[in-house]
Length: 420
Image (cartoon, rainbow, N blue to C red; front, top):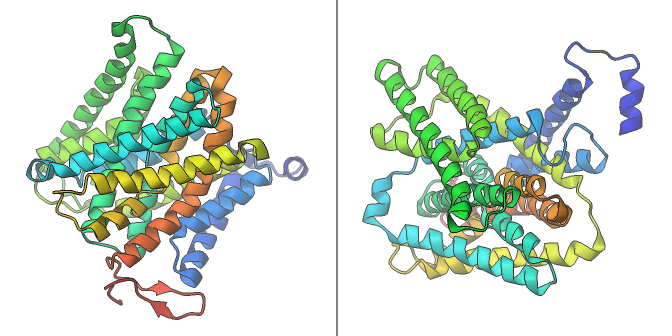
């Protein structure tokens, strides 16, 4: 890949630079791959995006730097922030008051996932300074992958809604605790106040920026139509600005966007449609994010000695999330069958896990290499395999209005799904 790049660079001198041409062509290929994968297999488009990014990463594509930094880090944070703002805007806090077992379910699956992965990593001989960050990485589900799967399958129903909410809440925990833990690694503290300080900084900055973002959008919605193109541009500009400001001040940009969306839902409780124009912009950002994540993850140092640890992390995480959702299912209003499909739908990992892993790698160079060797392959596998499992769970739950297209060209519905 580097030799090919040097060859073309000798005569191709675009105004924006050769990396711009490379990324533009890579995204074009990813777009075609995602379309073909969905059309001929019925799988979500994100599978095609991830495959293209994986091939590019394994081929030595140099457009993505690890650990994440610069424009690559900003684009990933921006894409995650847009997705989480939308996800937060769809979570009514009144729901938790009427059905508090959903919060119990969320805490149970997150705590069990963290504890199970941590102890299994220790049992496999991974040092504790690396096992704790790996457990935090495993905690995070991927609302971005799940929402793309939901959109591609045209899903709606209790399993879909609960899976999105639980995945969003697990992201909240991972972003808040992961950022604080990474900050503590950079500035070790012996006192209790010193240990709590990074948590307060991350939460304080994120809450402040999220509140400001929601207030500005609330004021804008008083005089602007939610479906206006200008409203879409304003929202994207505000999220981009908050992403840059939050990261600079020591907070978590995705966490601020998530909190901003949740606060806006409370300040503007009337149903408002996610701007139609936002769909195309969000699709482009999320596709770029998936390709970038898979490209970076594929460039990790793959080796046989850590393959067992990677496989153990994946399997333990799958089991822990399913068991955690099941334990918290009592009194939550969902059947055991629905709880099973919710647990399966929460398996994807993607950009949030990569952001958390990147923070730990930058914070501690001594254990950063080991963290990356285990985390990157796990993230890549679960971005690809997790999307397939989530799609299968939604189809089996009968909540997809789009039939599964088998390789033979026949339509196959899952559960009580409706044909369109």
